Length: 187
Length: 187
Image (cartoon, rainbow over all chains, first blue to last red; front, side, top):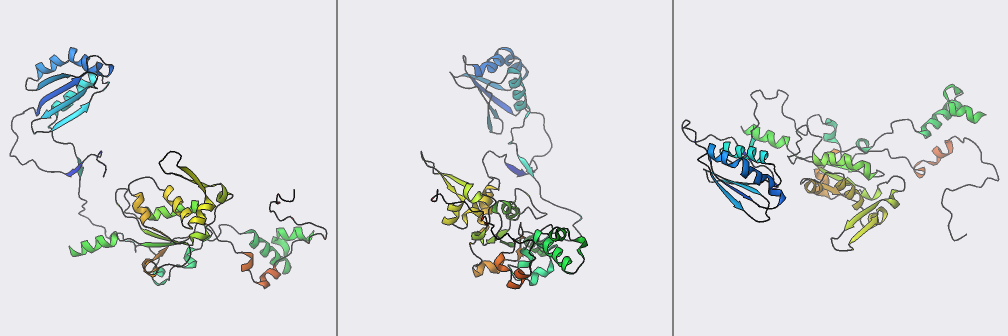
């Protein structure tokens, strides 16, 4: 399986009793950007106009700003369960960075998985499950392979040779009514 | 519970199919064969599950290509080194290995997924009609040919040839055109 595929897992229960008070799982955000280059323009715009509002609303989240010369901007978030996620915000406008940061803030920090399910039915098929022997000609059980009759494909239409032979047969029997080719040869 | 387990074996059992490639076009045969190799003929087909069947192809030496394709169809190859590109005409490839043309057409008509190599491993090609005993023992089904095999002139008996209606008589001084190209040595 390629490593880029979303990992899959079965649905599991959280092994804790009840639901406690809300604790923001996002702990730390590191925003690395460049002070001069164009790909970081949206990141700089975000820092100037939206960052202080975010910190005011979320006092529990630490934000580090990490200027790196001529690097593409990156968003590195750390959660309470120890997981870290990194995302490139190269050429992202400030509004998109706001939305992505909000997405990371509201997440639990658990890795996103594709859910797998076991197949189950309470009403199994009356006909029975399909097997390769279903709808297979029973005469094949006693046929020796390779078999010419099964393999051969017959022509869809009457061939030219068959038409000539049937016309000639009709001529010889003296009823050239349906023999179009026979008429031509008579003339 | 024990019957469920056996039911699973029966449903996912691999069938061995045989295909007679005598006078068959490999370009038209390939999409028919890959249907069985990938398991698309089964109602339980799913692109993520490896449920293809085995296909044994006999008489690959006696395949028929349409029109001028023996001369004009080229198989391309690149070694990866500079100047490593080469092209082989179909008749040259067929001389070198009588199973190669069929194999190339089947391989190229499948999509380049991770299952393609596995499907190719289940394709068994034989230049003549003779098969090893252990492979012939597995064969239990046959795939119908894609085009009708015409009857050759030497396969008709002398009586049949004599009884064939003569549509007209050639003039005494008529020079027959054989349809073959004139050799350049004369001019």
